[in-house]
Amino acid sequence: MRVALYTLGCKVNQFETAALAEGFISKGADIVNYTQEADIYVVNTCTVTSRAAYQSRQILRRLRRSRKKSRIIATGCYVQVGAQEILEAVPGQVCLVGNGQKAQLIDLAFEIEDGLEFYVGSISRATTIAPFTVKRQLGRTRAFVRIQDGCNSFCTYCIVPYARGRSRSLAPELVEKQVKTMIREGIKEVVFTGIHIGMYGEDLPEKTSLLDLLKSLCAAFPQLRFRLSSIEPSELTPDIISWASSTPNFCPHWHIPLQSGSDKILKRMNRHYTSSYYRNLIMELRAAMPEAAIGADVLAGFPGEDESAFEKTMELISELPITYVHAFPFSSRPGTVAAAMNDMVPKKEKTRRGRAVRNLGNEKKQAFYRSQVGKIFECLVEQQDKETGLWRGLTPNYIPVLIEETGRDQADLKNQILPVRITKAEKGMAFGTFR
Image (cartoon, rainbow, N blue to C red; front, top):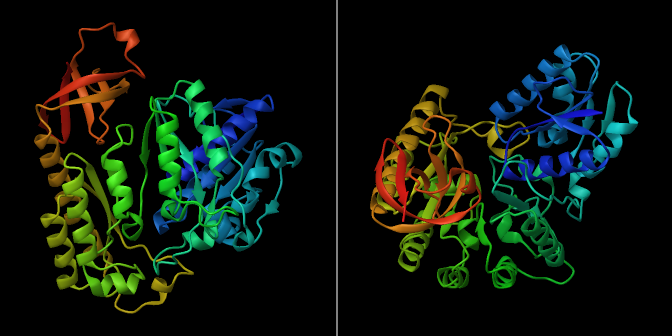
């Protein structure tokens, strides 16, 4: 049996697809690229934006039309909230497996015949996290570990709580077991990911916290680098910052969503902080960890965002020591509060604002790279760059470095942590040499 998997969306989806791939392999299947002939195609869909939903439909239509004899299985967030849209848009028969049933997908894939099958339940009733485990994400030197799923926040623009359900955590002993497995597979860095990772542990029978988990694992595995994928502003506490600043194997890299620099817009978004709170947090973080990378998300063109509100966002980003910015134009998602709001921003203006934020973010990133020139970092060497042929490494503070001079055996570099001096930063890249 030949199986191909295609992933859209977030790091949680990537982790779950890797787990599905290993599950299929354990059943004797061969994993092939989705562009190749396969008996089963699994598409792990996304619906965080209208564009993501469109891309999910597009790949399903393409597969259904070109692979008429294959089983096509769609799963993930778009299936959970937009199953009817998929059925209307995709010609022919397709199997739909919701997020709540994703852990049973492999067994279902071997049981179903090529036809319409529907396995989508109410995700709001889920009380435990799906028991996915991964040995190693193929071809990676760093590995994602999903420690949490779901979200309780219900930001007015976000469909994810309806697609993923309430916050659910993986028990600490299971997280540790997953980490041990990855160490045996040679992984050098683990990235903890989730939908709302700062809520970790609050739902478990024996309540714990993200900080407790991090303290335990960083102490237990000092040879391993750990980092977080993202954390909400209100959940990055002084205790976490103090601990992180004094823990050598916790990477000084934070991704802290901003979304808007306007308090009026933050309130409309149902974001539970103000611009001044965010400002103080970033300044406190920079004082405690001077070399840390600090990333932010910005949602441009939210309903009611006039030019003044947008300028407040631009000003806040400009003033703060933010390293990089992920900017997204607002995408109206049916089923969210924001979809019914008045004062929609025209598409052309949303695009302009998103581009302006991205350009500012690129300037901030390049300035950060330049500020690190001359410094030496322990770089995790990951792969050779396709364009230049140079080895590409990643610093603890999230700087991708093209290493111009090796002086070492080329075959021995991948997945090694080696000292690299940053020598220059230009054209959106950092360059270095082995020390």
